[in-house]
Length: 542
Image (cartoon, rainbow, N blue to C red; front, side, top):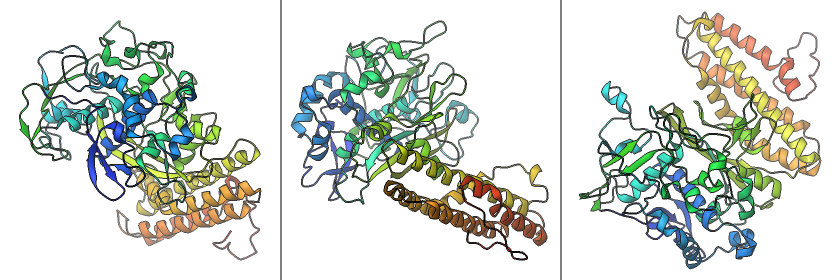
């Protein structure tokens, strides 16, 4: 039987500062931190990289959270990490809970055999076509048969990735605690900034909350037995008809890091050796199948995962996890990930930084990633990093938030203008046209992204100094107009789908220019519209 202890044995792929790659055990995160530190995860798939980061953060949060009573001081460990031996000692009490195989509890796997109906190991991968697609021969873009065997390390990572992101999977196959394909936002150091060197240890440690914060997370901190945190240590709380959901009062807050919605058991007996179809390691035992059963843990209630942003449900006010949407990420999402409001809550790890002024002088970034799911079908994986600017509470913060929201609202308005104008140029009757032209809005946000983040940095500095930021808003209006017109010219004349109609294109262009110089953008940006000289059109500059 293949086995792997996920605490004691090397299985996590990493890259060091000087370029070498290797597998490490979690306790070796800080190995040679002073001379050749580990700077990144080196996972063979983007979703594996995101999952491994969450695995390690969860492990640190569970076993080594900052706690003065235990002599673990967050700031001190950020500057001078603990030795591998210290981490090994801290992780050791949990080692028995992290066996991938064996006769006892298996990591993130059901305790029961679950029957004889096996599935190919590829079905652990979220993008692999499901049974319906295979039956209907609709696996056009992601073909069947590409993944037939996984090494134990990749099987463990695929298992954690699925349990963490679990989409709907048919009747009774439950979604993750944050729903299918949740968005995750982590705080990381800017690798190009001066000051603290960005290492994997520091990027993970930035997202570990003090132990005293854990009881304030959703969940029941009074449930101290291990199975309240690690659900695979006890019989599964099944969720067939008439059985209860698993609510925050039914599990410890740390179970949010170790959720197990799917009933799965890897087939680890009598494995043949070969080459892993994901990481290409050779001569390894290959896991080719697993068994599963529906009606696993059904997480219900107002769970609020500390690594995900949430919005507040309009009817109930309950926090709902945010998910990536078609079109991907752009700066229009920035405030959702960073700024709390009456309708949204950034990830707890981001808010904690903000409220507690953690690491004021460092240049930080948000690493955002997640699946865009259409029920059980993965449409895309999105990932980005964006600058993180924090501001202490008070009048300055209110001004900064207001300015950022105005900049984004103006961009959203302008994106709508240019999308509509290009449709008007392309089609005689644009209202009757079917098809998604949201990519035009995406193109506009992409063109203005560099200007936005440059302006965001300037705005942060200006507000901190207490200076007037009117000139920045005028500059943004100029950038929006310039890029909107450039995008129109680039796309309108090249995309007419019916007979080329230069008059129609010209009318659409004139209408766009009027909107770009109309009252709306001035109102959003709180700018005074200049008076137009008689017989003279307003110029490009505000």
